[in-house]
Every structure is written in C-alpha cells, then in structure tokens.
Image (cartoon, rainbow, N blue to C red; front, side, top):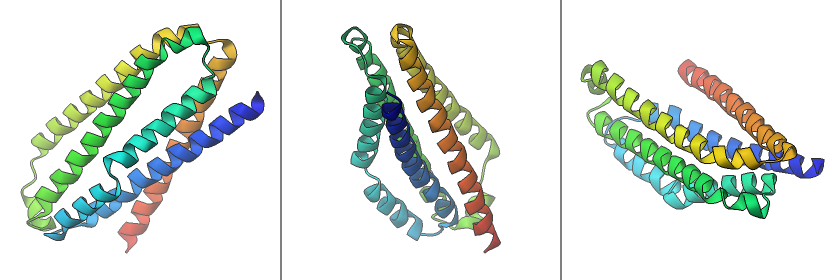
Length: 189
C-alpha cells in the first residue's frame, strides 16, 4: 500500500513538475520577445504545445489521481463529475494562456517601447480581475464536484489524496522558486 502511494506521489510530482516547468519556462522568454518576430514565436509555441499535449497532460494527471485513490464501484459513480470539472478547468487555463500569448504578440508588434507607452493600467486590472474570477469559478466547480466523492472516501483514500495535494503544492513551490531564480538570472544579462 505504501509503495503504491509513494509511486503515485512520485508520478504526480513528475507530471506536475514537467508541466509547471514547461509553463514557467515560456514566460520569461515571452517577456523578452519583441517586434514582428513575436507573432511567429507565439505561433511556434502554440504548435509545440498544442492541444494534444495539454490533453495528454490532463489525461495523465486524471489517471494518476484515479489510480492513487483506487475507487470502489460505489465511488466510481461520482468520478465523472470530478473528471469533467478537472478537464474544464484545464481547458479554460489553456485558453487563458493562449489569449495572453496572443495579446502579448499583438501589443509587441510595434516594439517593446511602444507597448509600454500604450499600456492602460485600468484595462490591465480589469482583465486581471476577470481572469482571477474565471480561475475562482473553475476552482469552485472542481471543489463542488469533489465534495460528494470525498464524503465517500475511506480514511486511507483521503490520506492518499492529501499526499497527492501536498506533493503538488511542494512541486509548485519549487517551480515558482526556480522561475524567480531564472527571472533574476535573465535580468542580470
């Protein structure tokens, strides 16, 4: 049992770390891109990280969670709602990333200096608030979908789910720290 949990946690760490490092690795580079080449670079990134890659990543995450929980037949009936909420959240995240990349490409077509001159902080705050609201709604839907299933989980299943959650948070913290280091290194150049 412990070996299964450890394997599931290691797999979750690997999948989460690889996706976070991919997502984080594009951000500093996106900030440095300027001019007409920006549109081409964004299109190249979209091709490299297409929908099938995101879907594969989402499928892997879902399979890890489901495998770690070892749901009983009675619990299985609650799983489709959880899976649908996870997939919807992932799709919305992918759309937000694509929209942000396209917005950067559009604004950077005139150059970085021009983009800074034309910035509108009120528009930025409104767009940020809208994005945070969407993320909040998605997370609430995931929590609502999990609630009926979570109530049926046995104590060992709850511990496995908690372990996966802690492992994911740990990996996310490491990815954020790595991004900060990379940003600091990039600013030193």
